[in-house]
Image 1 (cartoon, rainbow, N blue to C red):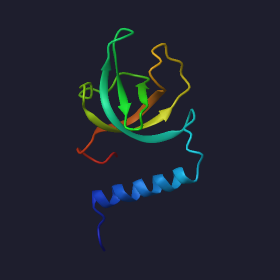
Image 2: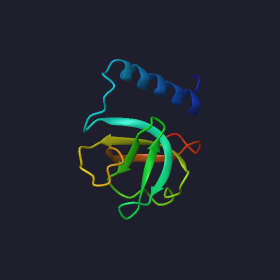
Image 3: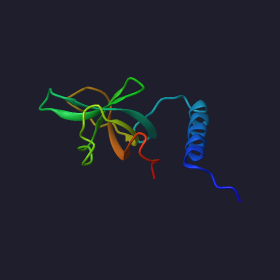
Length: 110
């Protein structure tokens, strides 16, 4: 039996995600889960906070602090999140609940 490599598995997941997105209206609503990637950034206003500047042009504000080791400006990350409808006085972008986060190039989520 042939084994699937991590790269092959990642490709399958990406294709499945694209197919699901193609079948939807593309709008992420509160409660929806989604994959993202971006760069960790520290914003100095409103007391200072860490957020993810997404590759899709959206800044994602986590509901809680980033896990230890991820509070590094410029760190490239992938993440799985749940969209929330939490209000934020920072108003940089949507507030999300991070379910998983990893340094890009380090591992496949799991």
